Length: 99
Image 1 (spheres, one colour):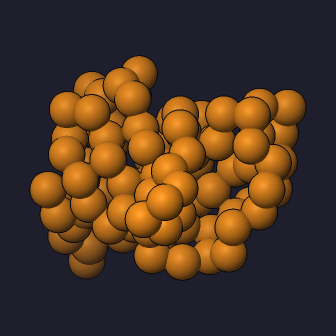
Image 2 (tube, rainbow, N blue to C red):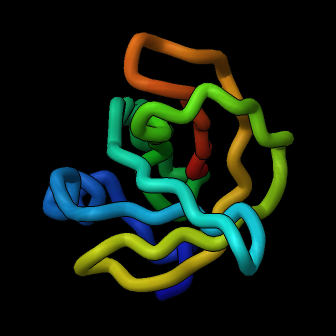
């Protein structure tokens, strides 16, 4: 899948599926969808803007903002630009923005 084809509806449909974030060829983190925020639709944008926050399960190490490969069960494999936004009680949170 191409991340450009993701929609808020697709994210909601697969919200509870397994997500793996590949840090490098030797390290992958188990992630979960923490938050989906749907923005205001605009005729000037190709889709409704939205953001997702993924949280690493029990891993508090901060990895830099970067393009990472995600394997999302049911959606497939695709690349996302993720930005660390700080820890919560479950792990480190990473945000992706879709316009």
